[in-house]
Image (cartoon, rainbow, N blue to C red; front, side, top):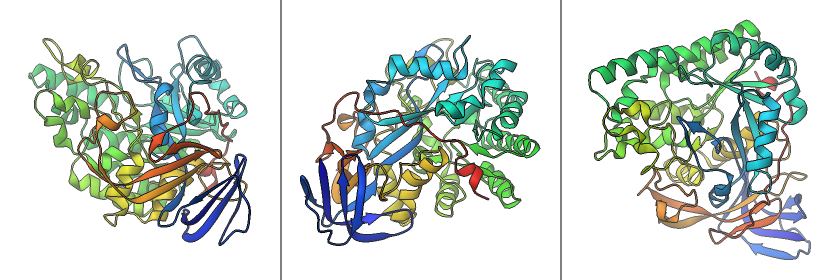
Amino acid sequence: MSLLIKNGTVVTSEDEVKADVYVEGETIKAIGENLDVKADEVIDAKGKFILPGGVDQHVHFSFTYKGSKVRGFETSNAALVGGTTTLIEFVNQEPGKGLIESIDSYRKTDVDGIAMTDYCFHSVMTDPRDEVIMEIPKLAEAGYPTMKLFMAYKGMFFHADDDAILKALLKGKDAGITIMVHAENADMIDVLIKDLVKEGKTEPYYHAVSRPPVVEAEATRRAIYLAELADAPLYVVHVSCKEALEEIKEAFNCGQRIYGETCTHYLVLDKEDLAKPDFEGAKYVCSPALRTKEHREALWEAVEKKWLNAISSDHCGFDFKEQKHMGRGEGKSFADIPNGAPGLQNRLNVLWTYGVLEGKLTRSRLVDLFATTPAKINGLSNKGRLQVGFDADIVIFDPDFEGVISVDRNLEQVDYTPYEGFRQKGRAETVFLRGNKVVDKGEYIGKKGEGRFVPGKPFGSCYQEQ
């Protein structure tokens, strides 16, 4: 099958130009003005923008918190409706299993034949035995060239001490494994939680009080020191506050290869959302916690000026009525609320409406943060760009669409969205995954299981820059 998209404005991470896009099979074959080719399907995209399919490098489909599990890849069509064609999930190492074995077994039972997007994985080391450390370089051969460690969550099986992080940095660098950290000081949080609960301050709002910016800044700085000692690059996920941002900027300006992302919710939601009545604040419990306006403004500046190089969703699909209510009732507190919020479907909608249209991002910068750089970070060499030879992951974006974000129109299969009632301007009208039309007129029309594993290559952009 062949496809010709005519008369649209092609937006790349560098520029935008009026051009046609020609696709044969799964691959982009030509981009240019007035292409003189015949195609099985011709789409007139006049007045619309042609974007690369998004790469969301931070999603959770297998995460379990205190026995409660999120929605899985059976909901990945929500990403496609939101213009995202490739997802990268964090998979915890299972007790008694190796890093690669944990991902491979999860793939066989929960992903392959189910996913509707293309997909890759980050390993999460939870058991830093010597034999596990020795396995880290093999992640590159398996197509999983990234690893995350949790500095937060004291007492949980996935919490990582400094020695585990340093060993991972040292062992991974020669093989091109990019080490990522969730940077929050677990001991500081633990003390604050216990003090707040003792004082009877148990409502969702106190989740943010228990995780002030200093706990994120301290852990970020400590991880940077570990990376300096190891002489290895480091990626800090979901940066939420200006103090942590300043630590990253300072290290980068001193010549270290330190990079970071932020997430959609940190750009538009507020700490005060956690104070909503009738336990509604539980919907906004995520870690790091939501911040205030001054932090949001600092983050918008950071992504515009490239101090942070990606915007992810950190999608974590816990239901409000059942799972989030685990923190309500006698003897319960905010510390029992599963951390995380859904955001898979609305990443592009929020970034366009509240970023591009409010002058905080150019369209090219959005493409870079939404698709191009996330692909580079994770070694996905055929993703994230509208370029000849790349996968035909294409979004035809209608800037004239107007609507309101609501759970009623959401495919995430979660009973709420933190963006309920947000104005939406523009939408992914038509989406192609490797040349296959999977969204038409904003509706999902694809098939379960047509997503494909995309192996990442080692020595991603965190090794190549600076």
